[in-house]
Image 1: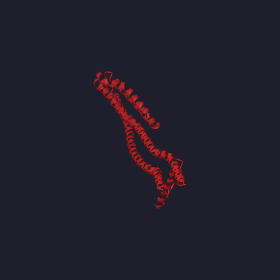
Image 2 (image 1 turned 180 degrees about the vertical axis):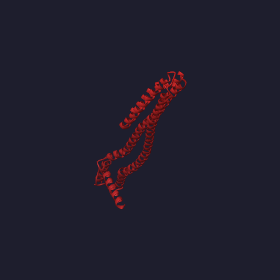
Image 3 (image 1 turned 60 degrees about the horizontal axis):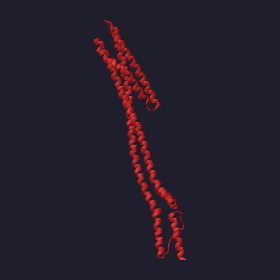
Image 4 (image 1 turned 60 degrees about the vertical axis):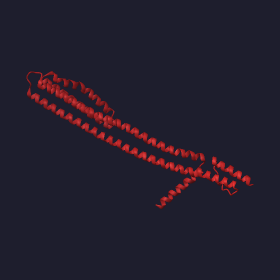
Length: 280
């Protein structure tokens, strides 16, 4: 522990020697640049965090919309099936209205999902979701074809019960596969949504930590700046003032051996030369 302390003490003394050798203009520039550097770091962290949050929030909104569109797609498909079953039971054409509306809406809903998936960041998850969407569209097309075939079975006066049973069983199987696939995609989106929410929470915690570090750094920088200003400028001015007082009182003066070619150094030289002139 003592070795570490002595090491830091030596480094600090070397730094002070280096600092004391610097001219006044350089010291002033450094004292200005240190807090400016802290402000730039703080701005960079805040800017980066805000851009990340904007990107993640947009992705969260997209995933919410994908889940909503999947729910809408399932509801529209159920409406089509319900309408066709109502027509099959009653042979009344008004029951076909939900079916006709669903058939008209489904292509637009598929295209909306396709656009949302195309905006998915990352090639691998985008390709996987596009493959799932193709499978959804294939099952949906087969189910609509099955419903159309079911409608055709009821067009004649007599219904082939065996064909009707096979058609209903096939339709049920397709609908079960369709629901399972939609549920799989929904679960994937919800899992990704939770990951995004956790990611934005991590960014928020990181930003709070960065703010704390920045404030701490700003405080430390101000303390160091004040110390260096006091040691490099105020102390030199105090010594210069004391020398002038001693000279006026005809006492011994103690001008520094090493001069700096800055404003205070030039003033020290002028006063020393004036004091030597009057002494001689």
